[in-house]
Image: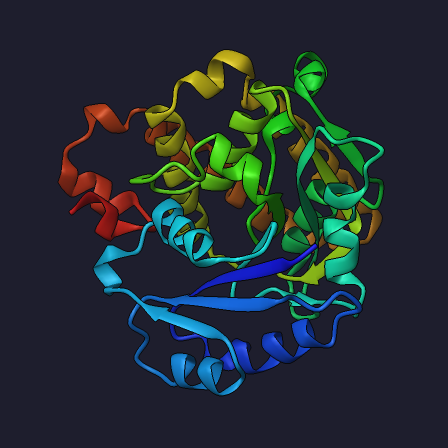
Length: 304
């Protein structure tokens, strides 16, 4: 089965020269790597082309989390499409093989998509390390509609940092939603699950990926998350988003205490308050003026 890898990029020369060789060294190498670049100001496109990637350049203002990935998918020839971000680096050479195995294993043909584990980089601060451990445990699972009462919004959790989907099912549900501020990955997983398909979490398919966002950056990120839910209220009809947040706070505090990261506790609490405030304001985005949306958002061009 052919595997196509799609990577949206912007000023990625720091990463693309590492990522592409890592992908080509995989035990299951991709049949093609497609780079969709948002008019980078560096050598991203040149480096990718030199390494044999198929490259396409779009206007920076045209970038859209859903539409840009859909463009890459349309250009792909593989039966399985792997979506990655430019700064996610595989931890070993079996990453792709492990990621796509649930989609090629005939034991459960309803599994239409999979996503891998994200491990924090070496420079990650303690709250970020915990977030990766919390969201990406070392135990795999297969999620379906039957899990909604127990998992809530976690049933739809899915990440395009490293994900795979069979092209036929991807096209059958209309691909990623377009003109969306973010959460295109979760929305795709929700469409698949509500259509009767399943999504596999594969911890053996791991990448290094994390961000040391500031308090202000986390506020903006969660404003955008809340806004995406506001624009897709049907998601909240199937699952509540807030219960998981309380569990996160409780377990993070216990983890910081257990590992004696005492000085990070005030910072972690401040991050939590910023996330909660941003999320709640995002849910109210329809009542906010555009000027405030731009000020609160991480993706300001979206509101232009």
